[in-house]
Image (cartoon, rainbow, N blue to C red; front, side):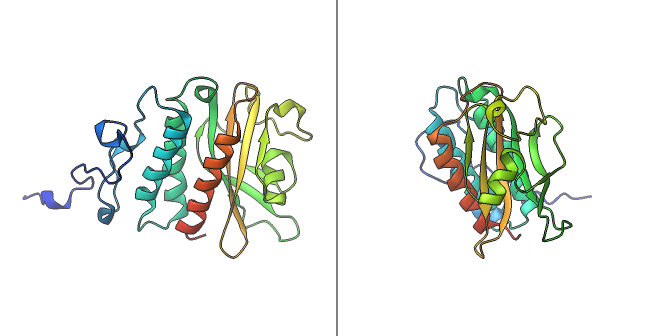
Length: 214
């Protein structure tokens, strides 16, 4: 049997963007047209700043999402990028213990909207969260980012993982104004997130909102 090597799932590695150092080992993007990115897209060099790590996440996500509009696929790969980015950084970012998504639950009645667990990296998590409950529910109902330095001080916090001490939740809002998902990141340290995290995660949320079919 002959094997058609021209149809490889992972095409030859190519640098796609001009981010300084990207082509030297921080993770190599593949050609957009193939719709495929090599696993080393999740590689982040040690010693980069948080801003540089987030910039790589955005650039890699743009390549991953190009010509791919399935939200399950897109959120899955994005969760992986975030997880590996945080764990390439010093504390407190390296203490991130959960990174992923909740999406709008299509089975919930309009009068009682709810989130349901989506793709993530970390421990087993709560399956459903009503709008207005906990940090995730607050972000969903207000459509505003929730940056919580100490989750134990947040009214109605839902303790899916007792090790979590701080949290940031960013809404993903579609072009038609619908809340379609939230980005949720937990950290095992107090004050695990700051305005840098807010700014970059909101950029990521906007990219996901316009690049996926919800």
